[in-house]
Image (cartoon, rainbow, N blue to C red; front, side, top):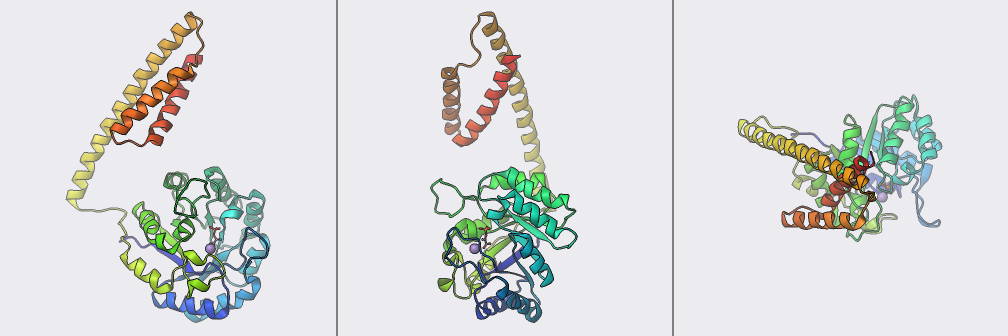
Length: 341
Ligand code: PEP
Ligand code: MN
């Protein structure tokens, strides 16, 4: 079975007792990587902003006494240097920081040559370019020990989740950076301890490489993100019920069935390309007669009819409306372009 990377610990390091108690319980359950936020990015001043450097000796105790590897969020060069000197094993760039190119650049330059691994959380907004850009800024400084974390995107869409997971974007990042480990942070997606499990399972079903999950020895009393943290015991029983799929399977039955289905997919794809080519030919012809008759290329009324008919027919066949709209909008763009030539 594929080994998944687990990073766990409280949202924030709050006290020596809280850090040690949480870490000890996680360690006993076999977790190697301990997280805790030292500097907390908060929306409004005056709320708990983290214990800062005061928490460093607590993290060092976790490393020295339990043999765990320790990591925290770095939001500026000073955090990087402080953590490097304190012997942290890894840092991550938080969602708010990934959105800020100047801070990412500063962190990348501070990390240069340190050999410290760094994970990059997706930015708050659904912007793959910004996420990829942060990775590229790190790579440009010669940093090659990089990982990705999906923690959901802030959104006005109604949802029970605090941040929306967008698996299509995650798959796009995987294709852009296939060699980078990709984790999911179900805690910040969920915003509520009750939903952590279903999100974690979805991430593993998709083949992500691990999870960063917030755990606190007493979540109710947490000074940040109280609603989404699990107790170490809750987390361990959750982990035990997660199903980890393997990345492959050698069974002849599975192999035969898979190759049959893949041949069918190849045939479908060939048909799609042929139909698209035929459609483009017709579209060119329409372009020609519009030109000859001095009629404008774009006729919105007609396009609305086309797309509504496709959505309706798609619904009938169980296809999602947004899927049909995305595909047909691309087809329309290509069609208009040919008619312009
Ligand atoms: C965190 O990990 O505690 C945190 C603040 O995460 P994010 O940057 O994803 O909001
Ligand atoms: Mn948090």
